Length: 174
Image 1 (cartoon, rainbow, N blue to C red):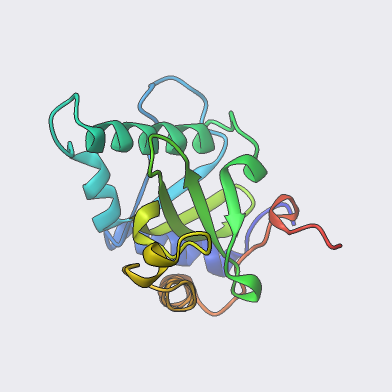
Image 2: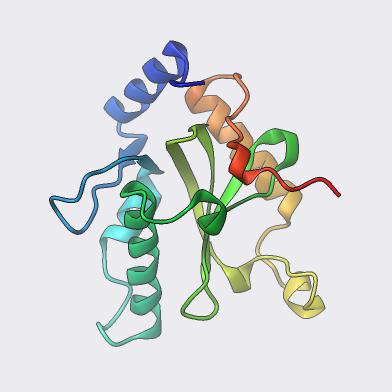
């Protein structure tokens, strides 16, 4: 598949024109954008504003998230290193920002191998974690609900066509 469907392209343009999504612009100007990262308007606005003092842990996390967004757009990191598929047949994926601890996840889906739409951002300590029962108990949302709500939001914006699942994201079969 060399391009995503005309229906998806039109829906993408409509969502952008309506202000529902914003396309990420790399921080380092002049770098060649080879992929497209679109973020939910609220998520984009959240990343556009500082999260605290320049030396704070929260601001350091925001800077790392922005660097990961740039790495995706500029194609300086392999998809497999940056993303995991978490929604099975729903096609929901997470962009993993591992440092600084606790890290963060941008949850969304691929419209094409080179087009990712992020719907939500959660710190890793806000999500269930099977190795930490207490963290799982106090998580803001469970994985099943997160996957369903993300898939629903993406289908509202871009239609019922299944999300693209890049081969590099598919888990290896045993």
